[in-house]
Length: 157
Image 1 (cartoon, rainbow, N blue to C red):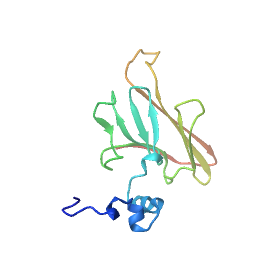
Image 2: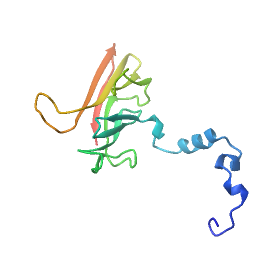
Image 3: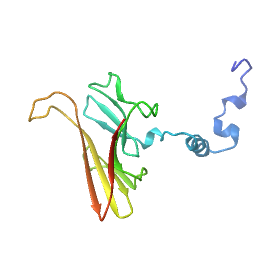
Image 4: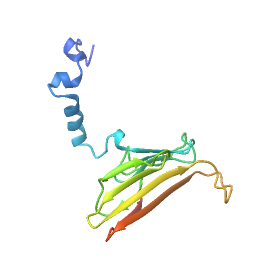
């Protein structure tokens, strides 16, 4: 039974087959109305104890501290009012390129700002800070601007 009625062969078909649209069209239609990017578009950072998910806009939208099983510090990927930390260009939210630096867990996001480029590199450092022997997780974000002009902004909410 499904919803108080007998389940038919039609109900067992994937939604794309029932609607006559491809799975990509169904997913695209759902994404069209969502303020959240698809999970596959998030970058993943980890130091083997803490993880963070970085949205294409450059915002850290999920991070639990000081361990993965602790409450989230940033949770905007589930609720836009649940906090994030964005570092990137003021007026551009869609990156031109995104990659992990070869052989590392360093996520590099690049935006073309017209007269210049903004490049943000994110990583969670593994192990203690050798200068202080501090066991707390260390998140590193670096910004590089190249070209004639590129305005950056940092926002923690």
